[in-house]
Length: 597
Image 1 (cartoon, rainbow, N blue to C red):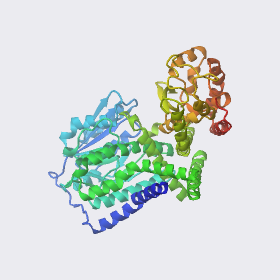
Image 2 (image 1 turned 180 degrees about the vertical axis):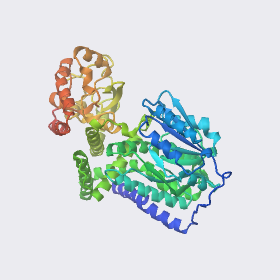
Image 3 (image 1 turned 30 degrees about the vertical axis):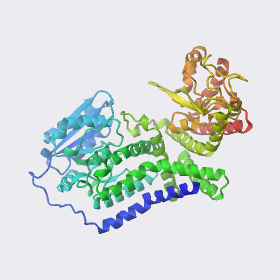
Image 4 (image 1 turned 90 degrees about the vertical axis):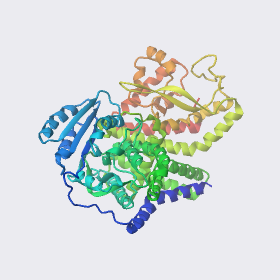
């Protein structure tokens, strides 16, 4: 059964990435060629186009973007540029107002609206849609950092001479990346969309630039993540299609490093999962070609992270049970991933095409899985991916990579132990198997995160009914027989791998304390609160492996020095990495030797 799951997922993966493009090529070769009439449109035939841009702190790019739009081979009196600043805190507004004065001299209509507080890209675009949509025949949505070929608006207009075409986009060209795999990904995406266009079955565009008929553009729900996709799907029908225009080039000016690309893919993963609901609601409105395209591409891409996680869990269980083939396959995957982690840690630029490609696919789907798990976190606020602090990016990237790999391996490897422990807990005492407890998470300058930490229940279900929140003591009578073993081996902490995967916690970090203890601890231990400033709490940590569980304020006081030692180690990459590995090995030693409490 486990091998069936693995093979089934592998077949779908191969179909999605390799067989589907081949089928598209075969079908496109037999379909009538979609040819765009290159005859210039008369001024009367030329549709009016409104360019909508949502901007958040875009002072570095907005001037070049406006000059790019002004250079379009399109009648100035037939286009308008509308920018909305979404709570910008930089000089974006000043730059736009200065450049727009020059545009007005060229008779190019340009407006700037400002939203006082950052409300999210979708809300910003909704503002423009409600105010300006009805002034135009076609709406072009574009990012500030994406430049368009000078014929872009002209080609959009020519594509929409065909009344069945409701949306248009073109080739997306990312800025050449350090790791190279991003370039290959977009070459693949452009090729697939080109083939889908021949069948009238384009099911997605690069959000950097896409155009739609104005009457098909509608305001979206504020929690929408992939706004470009939802707008497109809402407009498609059996007689309405999207077009891929090969003469349009969309050139990205920003360069994503691996950390930024990973963050972007987390958001895309959340959006891909969210948009499944939109697809299933609209599926009856699609043509046969569109239905084939959506299910082979968008649906499989949305569910693939979950399916691959299931296949990995099945493979890990087989390896634990002694299946040699599974052990070899799992070992190979871990080895390839380890090479990728080492390359990232030491910034190796040497290209290893096969290993780099495999690691990019694994990392992409891992990011997608994190996005699905944390879908509820995506509200309306948005930020530039590239606004991350460069000083801590390498440690942050490596630490998060270790956390994700460790959490996935931990959950799959220890799932049988968690299940057996759960059965033992139910047989031993009343109450649930897993309980959640509110703890204080990472503390930042403007906010303190409160998180729910998951643990296997080791005490009676009514342990704090009479006393309220109190520390556990040595030989605590509230601890059950099974619970004593779970705490001694730290098995009760295993569900916290889920907290790590969600991003609430890290594998290594200061112990998360309960809010009810915080006031007392801060009063009696100076600078106690600073121990988790800017750092996620951990399942294990230097203080935990050196001192064990807390039983009193004095125990916490003794552990503060260890927590600060860990924080100080993060000032230098090599020191942090050595300490991180040392804590991991000490944690394994505690578990194996049963030195917990």
